[in-house]
Length: 88
Image (cartoon, rainbow, N blue to C red; front, top):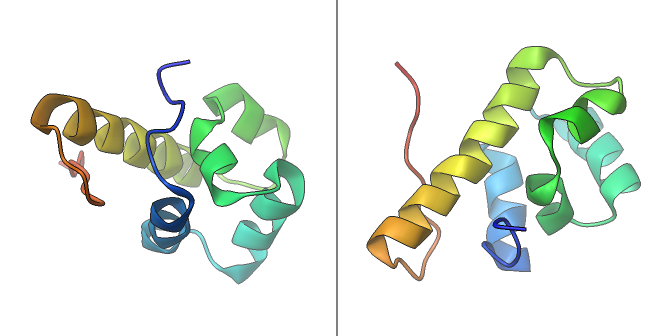
């Protein structure tokens, strides 16, 4: 999968705190299901929707964050946590 090993575990933990709309309860639900922060960002939109605990907007924020990180990492060769803000 193209999302494999895009973020380190530490970067993924930081990223979870940066995603708009993810508070303690939603983050806890994600971690209970996916087991670690990296797995959350490797999840597909369908996998995130199947949990039934996240609004569409938050799912989009997670997917956009993961895709932005992928773009930043693959296009710029960045080694640290960076993402492209896809907001209008």
